[in-house]
Image 1 (tube, rainbow, N blue to C red):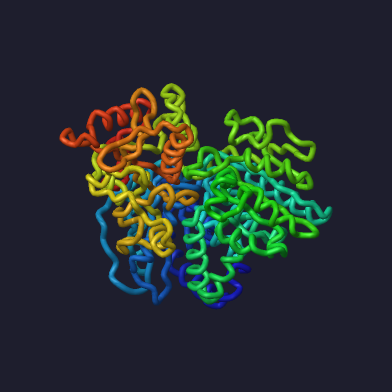
Image 2: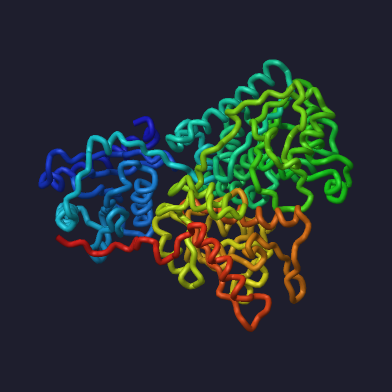
Length: 624
């Protein structure tokens, strides 16, 4: 009852009502079936009212007590719970899951009978008196299939929260320890957080300056780890990022969540979230002109490898130091201690002036009073710009716990990240080793077909959206506008937080987010609109569109920015990515069909699946 302490009497009445309905409804079924009440979904700190495990299906029952009705929101909630079980509960992957909404008032809908195997059916409605009949009808239409009920109850439910969900849960001060149990194969996420917090404690006790370099592949949980640190009572730090859209979205989500729950006013929530999540540019502008130390003793610097060099800093801030050197100077104003947690991504540099880790190494060489903790990869990478030191200094401690190697973002297949990396390196044979029936990446040449599939997948609270490269300028000819204003905080927050039928939402599938708008954030289903700025010609060919023609990119850093742009776009999906490659137009030299065809053929040869191969999610009738 601890979770319901604030409304204990109301909860007891609701439980009594539910039990009064369930007892007569379940007397007709076998005694070995299992009924679980208040089953926890720790991803959002929510609980399922009831889960019935049978020998034919898993039935999720959401109750809307006496005054509740059959609203769209209630149906979405019930369906989302069922999808949570399918995606994150090990015992649900090979079974039918049926969501039922029971409400005290209103008119229930009567969808067509049909149950996907495996998968989630449509939501079935029932008034209280109708529940026994509905359960009997559902069970009667599903063939028996062995379900080890005892094993199901003890199978792990290990959800992987989105960045927005994690921030909300951490901000609400509940589920921090549970969130870190994300998946059985991600123990190093907890180890990494523990290593960082140990460095914070050491710096505080021993009065030291410590910088910690955390590495990880795309989608491995670096941002989740950083948020965990800044929201922890031990660190009480600030999360700094150069990705402004992440700042906009997280602040808006926290303010919206707090205001909805009545815990804080929207203004108070915005003020509190600003103290936890801030743009690195704002942090520098606030602190550079001053001589006193900043308010924070601990900062988490997201995507630290993207810190700009001295040349770019001179143009932007009229300052002669690199961003790394400036941050070190600001934090060492503290007389007692300071900690910088530098989160380092691989292949995420998409802007001119991004200096890489070598610039951090140079700045630290000049400031030997900083103690360094780092993952091994910052010393062994073959790319000189991303190598922290050529010769490690004595104050460096290498800690393998500071590397996150398991991809968390894609909940359907951990092989997706390795496949994407192999494809962007042009290694067809290696990509095929990671491809398979569960590779969640698909190819289509039809934009309407991609939209149709994405809309089909938007069930429950699952989100979908279009993305494209900001350099894919000829997508305009196909009706795709590659100019999302990622500096507009309201536009970005609306795109990630609003829901269809709000036309500003990602779910509208109208305005694609570019790499600048979506870096660091994620969707469940992504439609990637492939542009003419990256094409396969026996190797990856990069181009810029200027005036009326494409121009080849020759500078190596600019070529890597284009490749990394597509790395960002290809790693935004938690479930599935659908790549739409235009057909082109033989009468338009800027959209030559043969170039698009060659790119589509290469991705297909690497193992990307044709969209028609996706198993139909729409329930098909299965009658005995």
